[in-house]
Length: 453
Image 1 (cartoon, rainbow, N blue to C red):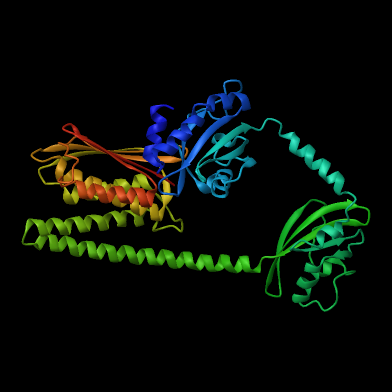
Image 2: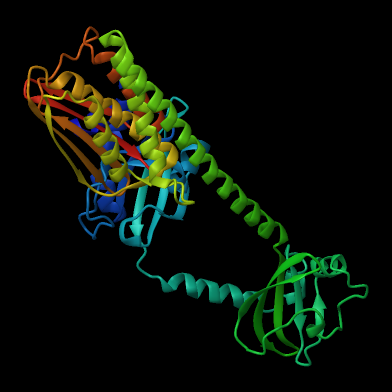
């Protein structure tokens, strides 16, 4: 085990030294496992937030090509993106033959996961991943299975499916219907059993012999039918009919909610602008410097939320492009909080990243605090300064760096910046599933935090 593995354990997990030492015995054998199994091998641990896992060790096979070009060590992974890992960790059971979801270039990779148990507790999961080379194998297996089913009557299978199913003969008459079809058509007002009816009395079926999906309305019901050509003796095609009335109604309600949500965001934006304006006015009339500063800080925080709302206020989408949002936040802060004698050279660089509205608000508040601290403390007794924001996105994590060339500060509890940074660190940890890293000195301060979207 090297220093990187050890740092990952302490940075992201709650494992104690005894548990880490136990995992070291696995890490030391991983290369041998990778070569022997001709697979990429990983050890994943639950992070201290419980919301994600982290890859604390990896080994690529030397005898066959790896499924990954890049190193994945230190990557944070959401539980939902790795079902095999999730099942193995929480059920304490091995999981084999599951396709990996979070794979670059959408390559076909199959996973096998095994729990690593120490003192009756799962402390990690050992994962083998192999590239699927023979894609035709499953097709051959499927063909073999279908051959075995030839002796099974179609009716026996259709009787137990949830949707309505009918079989249509070569005279376009219904020669079979399952129980679900009988119940469905009775609810649509058909008095007689549909068995023996011409299919045109139920459904406007296209003459095409191709498989098709059609939707139409009957008696306030919305039905979706799938035509499946059979062309077997006695059966021309099958119709699988699903009542999607509730789905359509839910979509209509969802559209109404989206419109209401957009209207609510407009009202929130107007209200926040009003309150921010009141704070600005009070700041200009405040009798003390401290009071004026407090009003300005409150107005700045409101402006960061406004910048977040502004990114999605004119669309139904709940995602916000954070580079543009951060640019607005920083522009507003520099205009309102920078001293008149201070010239700030501000730059924002990096990737465009779409995040949810909830995460965008948190990111906006964090960046607002960091820029505010830089403007307030970094450039004392100076006429100019530089602030740079860099946004980077990789396959899983995203990182934002806020850097200035100011005078720095002391990282201790007596520092004016300490309580603010402690609050920011909590926000990053609990709301963004990330970590805040601060590097400060006489040549400036660099603060970075990561998050998963």
